[in-house]
Amino acid sequence: MIRVLVVDDQTLVRAGVGLLLRTAGGFEVVGEAGDGHDAVRLAERLRPDVILMDLRMPRMDGIEATRRILMRQPSARVLVLTTFADDANVYGALGAGALGYLVKDGAPEELVDAVGRAARGEALLAPPVLARVLHRALAAHDRDQRPHPDASVRLLSPREREVLALVGAGLSNAEIGARLHLGVTTVKTHVSAAMEKLELRNRVQAAVLAHRLGLVDDDFNPVPGAGSP
Image (cartoon, rainbow, N blue to C red):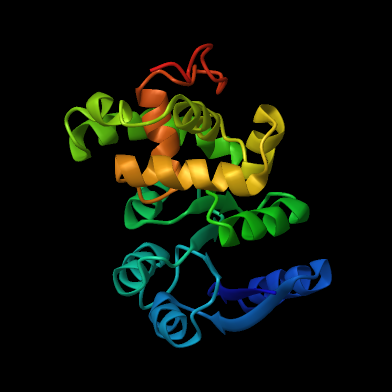
């Protein structure tokens, strides 16, 4: 069972999300919070597998709550679920360490799939914000990350570079495995090794770096020969 903490200031939204997850099966809603302050407190006490986080809430917003949760629990998996997909919220949430970003007008099955992927450590961005996030994040990466990431990427094996390119294309571990004819466990090993070598915290950062290094084109397709050093 995937243990989920649902954070939203609207009672009906919390109830609806909880019902959706319980109906889907394989999920347990272990707690609900109506603001960021309670989210921080419950996340520390309950240690859920995934925290579904709204952004605009009283007392403490979701961005600050995400930042505080990850300061105390660096391995926590926060998945934003919000009405707002403007730049300030998107980049604020990802900058605070959120693993993924969904909007509330998405399909119910997309939310269920995203929570499952978040529990496995896979990042997910809603299609309306994915391209914008990556293109804006490239500039932020230039400012905030190591000045010469190209040197670090040489530490990767050809297979790890190939996997990094597919992460940049937005594929899940299962999809990468199908593309490369590898088991999901093997893919996870390659992803983890690449992220450790490059000192990346999550798959969003990995996707940004893959784009910056030219392993993925503007249409989110791996560049031929991406696995070559």
